[in-house]
Length: 115
Image (tube, rainbow, N blue to C red; front, top):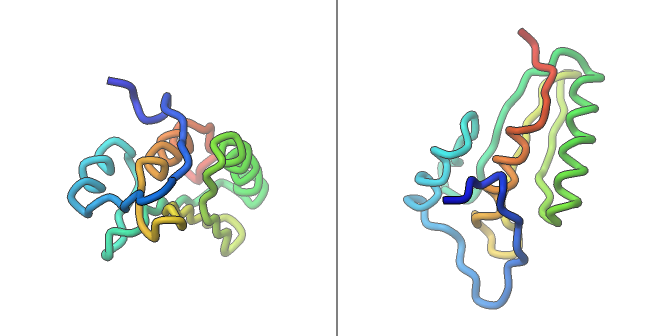
């Protein structure tokens, strides 16, 4: 079985349906640190970075992956080092496998976290 981080995001076309909450929970187990929203339409990951610069550098790395995959998360930086990453597939108003592929790829990025 191919790990999620080795897969490539694919465009959502036609009648694509969002994942059920049950299916999302199964994939969620493959992306440590990510949480499923209460409505099952989004996953998110909260990080406390070592510094503002570390947070901005990680955002840049996430942007590189997102552009390569053509699947872009919402990224929120608050209190200078608190980073929240949110993933959902806007075209289908819910989650697709693409969101979990991106989460897995983000998890593999080097992160300078607060200890």
